[in-house]
Amino acid sequence: MAQELEVSERPLPWQLAIWQRLLTNYQRQHLAHALLINGVAGIGKVQLALAFSQRLLCLAPDSDFACGQCKSCKLFSSGNHPNFIHVKPEEEGKAIVIQQVRALNEFAHKKAQFEGYRIILISPAEAMNLSSANALLKTLEEPGSKTLLMLVSHLSGKLLATIKSRCQAVDCREPSVEQALDWLSVHDYDRTLAESSLVMSEGAPLKALHILGQGLIETRHQVVADLLSLRSKSVGVVEVAARWNKAADLSEILHWLISVSVDLAKLKVHQEARNRDLISVLEEASAGLQVNSCFQFHDQLMEVRRLLLSTANPNRQMLIESLLFDWVALP
Image 1 (cartoon, rainbow, N blue to C red):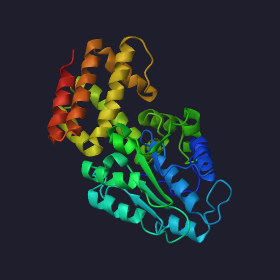
Image 2: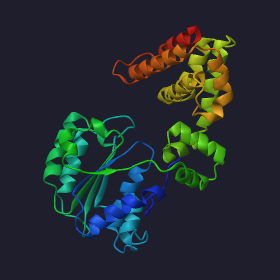
Image 3: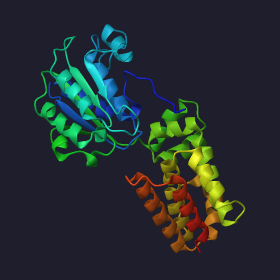
Image 4: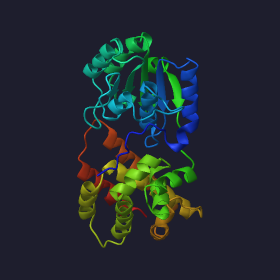
């Protein structure tokens, strides 16, 4: 089961500079009515938006942060604050539909039950389909008095230009490796495992925490070991494909393998691999391949990922089997 962070009245440690800018704009009454919080997935953008929402709604803020104890904070923490709504897909991976946006449009123009802001959080904003995105435009253009919209996006390039132009961008970056490791150490994970999880998550700490909590480092080791076993013909393609299809999200496996394919090519030209915890297996696999085969494997992985993300709805088992037969046949 994925680990979830509790709602906190404080931002994450690497967000303090952004937090201070937002708070200063608010205190000087320069806060835009719509914020687009950009950045890669897994760095805590929703947590930032929630903490800032709670600070704006708090009845007795403790300097920079919400008090966490007043009536407003307790309502917020319980998910029942009447001046706040969080609009997100009703099922993971699904769209934010027009009915949800119509409801938030109505909310935006209602009188607040407490004095202060009405806050609307939309995440991920790119989950809005065309109809729902267009329905949001009027509220972005003419929000109600003291209404704040926060759109959190992992892929802001997918948003309508008319949406982006009506929002003030808040660009979030990944923390430094040391910041991320320090934060993960608070959750009592071994530093070596934490380092591996950060490589797998490409520096996104919340995603790394999920990887650690789900035991995905061990799954990844097994996936890469399977590549060697397939090349040595000690295991069959159909068996491995079935195991991969059941063991973890296929898009996650492809993400790992794309990183591995880059490392295989690096090792062939005597460069350092990024996945250091896999180095012995990578060196063995690389030794049996031509450098062009590493690039070919990478291209095949990218094509499989493209098909998986398309609307074609391919047969997952057959897709994996085809990829693995190609892997075994590489010179």
